[in-house]
Image (cartoon, rainbow, N blue to C red; front, top):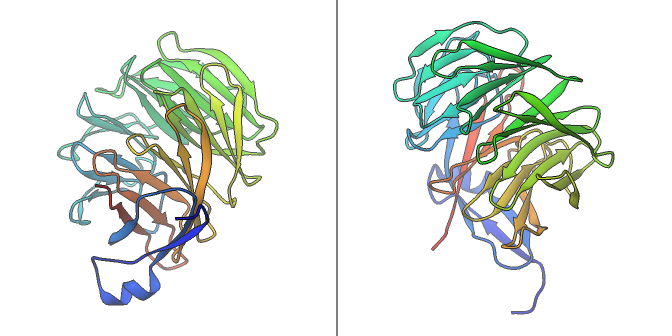
Length: 322
């Protein structure tokens, strides 16, 4: 076959026939990518949304309001307190999850175990090396994940947007609207580095490949930057369509998903050497600006924020991987 752009249409193999005509994907690719089918559309009860996160072990999805969603059935199986804050972190080896306002809950039952309310957090991450949770806001508040007790605070230099933890190295990466990345050491709870990324205007979503030491940063100026997570060097600047908030990396397939908020999603491929390139643009009929990847199934969960008076929905796309 000649090396040229191919247009691959994706249709719903599962679900109502009415979805097939209105919910399809078209992916222009170079090289070979897996084809996808729409496995499910989850209609939430809530209109509130946040960054999606998946607990692969217990098969739960978080980030649609305060709802706990079974990823197998798409059913709502529980709810967390409405004031817990709609950002979540998972500590699978401890069996607990945490919210940005300081709630600790059991991953298996959804029961709230502790709740020392924090008002300033905009994001929360869990670092497996230090077994600590970091609530990121005006300061980084460090929590003992089993109890929710505050064990430390780290002043931050500016207003953060998002954060991601590298459990291999014990580092927390925090991005700021002033086009910089702060690196925190999770053990000492001190800043290690601060990297300026002047070519990235207003960094938003973050994702990490800890194996190849790659930090992915989506930017509001329609770029996604790939950084060496050891030293902050910009290795690649790749075009995206803008409007991005959350990005997701599939470690098994080595694909990065960047929803653009305009009905498209950029797919970026990383090769075995850690080099990245744009594989194609996915046309998504219902839009979406947040994404999560299930590491165990490679399913892609795309969040469509609710319009006024509507409910949020999550589109679940499954790759056909042999």
